[in-house]
Length: 329
Ligand code: CP
Ligand code: NVA
Image 1 (cartoon, rainbow, N blue to C red):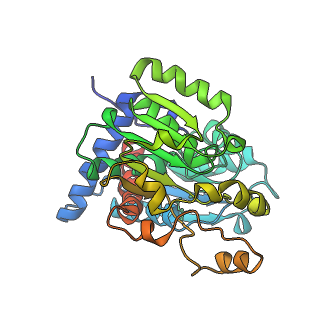
Image 2: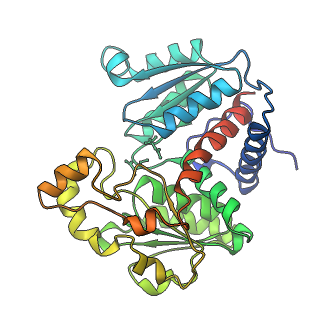
């Protein structure tokens, strides 16, 4: 059955069938191959997109910009300080205006409802560039990276996410693993366990796809992992929670010893980035001065040959391009 996603929004992995997710991954691999071969097709020529950012970004913003420019589209960037949205103009009015001017809208911010409302009122495809509970373009890049480095079909792969198992990255990994029939283990403290409602949504999908989705604090569950993933301990907007998170998550810091519990010397390490893996950032230094070591992973893992984090970062471009091409071309 042929898949067409033209005119759709990309708000959550859960809005897509397994076949549609597969289609986006295949398209991302193809667009990556073409870029490496220097093939340019300008699939988005004549289109214009706007990027709305209420939280900071390096990878997501740059990937949307380069993806659009590679395919001949125009791009406008607006952050919360330089637009009227929400302050002097309601979200609904801004959505209606942007929908008249642009062919597509990317949004990064806090509340998932904002991205849903932008899609509802703008009348054009809207792309979720991260909210407090979702980061769907990241999940596509993560799975694409697994496919490049693990010589097994996805439905035979086990992915461990270690840390705050109820954050936006963990939830999107749960969703995509459910859709693709994979084995997902959320490994973290009971206090940060994925919400029951999220577990239930995944269980429903897993009935169809054969996925296994579990959350635990038992290290025995790490055995046989093909990919080991972590994220920062306090997401954007949660900085006040750092003391509490350091206490809860220090036992889940990704070290060589923890990775060894997979029993798989080829287990790859993944991270959405940005990462605290040393003290080369102002934030890590400031927190250390206050007595908090906020590193979620140590350098012997982050810088190891098993670490594929920079391939993963590059794949943000190819997967975001796939989303734009699938929905706007
Ligand atoms: N992984 C990710 O979304 O990175 P940025 O915050 O830099 O966009
Ligand atoms: N969980 C992180 C992901 C950053 C890409 C955050 O929301 O800050």
